[in-house]
Each structure stands twice: as C-alpha cells, then as structure tokens.
Image (cartoon, rainbow over all chains, first blue to last red; front, side, top):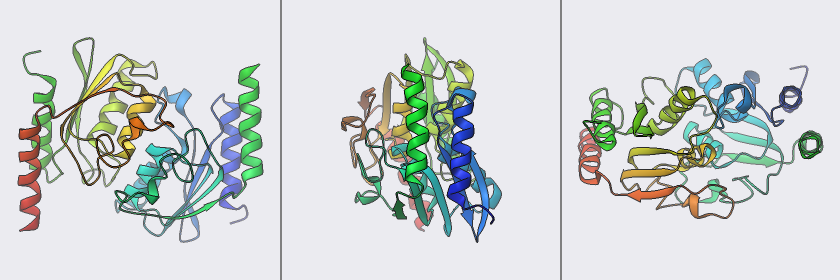
Length: 148
Length: 148
C-alpha cells in the first residue's frame, strides 16, 4: 500500500467535512489489502446510524461474504461509539486502530468501555492515538465552523 | 391496526425462525401506523449486524426522510444489544417496548444499561416484558433445536 490505512481514513474524513458531514473516516484491512473505505454519511443519507465504521463494516462483510471480519483490522479516525463498538464485537474484527478519543460519545476508552464488559463476547486489540493529531485537527476545525 | 405492533413483531420473529434465523422481530410505529417491520436477517445477509432493530430503524428512516425517529416507537421481541441500543439513542426513538430480556447480550435492562449512562444523550421510555412469554417461547424452541 502506498498510503497507510489511517492516511486513507483521514483523507475520507476530510472529504466528509468538505460535504458538511462530521469528519470521520474508516478503513478495513484484510490480508494487507484495503477491502472497505467509508466515511460518515449521516447527512447525505438522513441516517444518524450511517457512521463511517458501520458503512465500512457492511461493505467489508459484502466483500468477504463469510459473515465475519475475523483477521481484519479497522482503522477509524475517531473513537467508536456504543453502536459501532457493538458492531465491531459482532463481526469479530481483530484489531481497532483509532485516532482521536471521544470523551463525549466514545465507548472504547471512554463511557461504557464496551470491550471491557463481561457481557461483551469479543474483545479486539485496541490501538488508540494513531493519527490523533490530524484527526483531532479535522474535528476541531469542523465543529468550530459550525459554532460560528 | 387489527393486530398489535408486538403481534406483528412476534409473527416476524416466527418467520425468522422458519428460515433458520434467531427469532427476533421489530416494528416501528409512527402516528399509530406501522412504518417499518423487519426481522433478523443475519444468516441471509451474512451480516451479524443485520439485527431486526437495525433493519427496522434504517427502513423507518428511509420512510420518514427526516433523519430522526423522534415521536416513533419501537416494538422488538428481544431486549436490544449495545449496537441496537446505540442506534435507538442516535435516532431518538421515543419509546422502546421489548419482549424477552437478554441477560447475555442485552444492553437496556442488563449489561451496560446504555440508556442509564451519563454518556448516552437520549433516553427513550422503556417498557419491558410486552409479549415476553411468546417471545421467550420462540427463542427457547429455536435454540433447543440448534443444540440437538
């Protein structure tokens, strides 16, 4: 891969911002290959569940056809929320790399910390802070414009 | 409505079981009208995120086109998991009626109890135990067959 998966996710996050969507991008890698690359489309689809991770997970499942993403890794520019963390557990993703922490709605290192709960039946490896500076800058810029 | 929304959800759950899917059905009602009726399709779609609630929520959003389900009520035969509870909060559903409790993976009255968490920004009204006996019977029958 010429660009790292997180570089691609960050480019997608920037694309989202350019379209007026909160800047979050997500990429799924399997056997060293990007099999899904999506970004937030909540506004475009009028669907508040159309988070980058959910769209990438469904695209990767369609690509694989096995009903699981075990052995695959997710790169996402923002800490996943409870919905997305639940989807990550259901699909048995191997590893989650995320950029910025989300103290308000994050559910991995913040809030409910889903993967640490006894009722969570799959805990992926978690690597936080990858591309954090760029991911946070995109989010800050986007939300400061909204507040003007 | 000739049948109650939970009756319809239970019929859909039975349909799911007949197709080899875990028996869960979900119906969304808005202004006294059913605007979405779905059931578990995880096997058929090879997608472990294709829970009845997620499919019903997306169908209802498509029907409404406003990006929100405020004022709408969800009827689901099984207590929602973390993913589905997250989607319920994101879409601002007004009320959630559920049938059987799910001590293993439920996230409303069990496990993470998402709507009781300070990081959860929308708490729907919750009515548990509606149609519980029939919902539990369907689930028990389905899982006892699997174990044979």
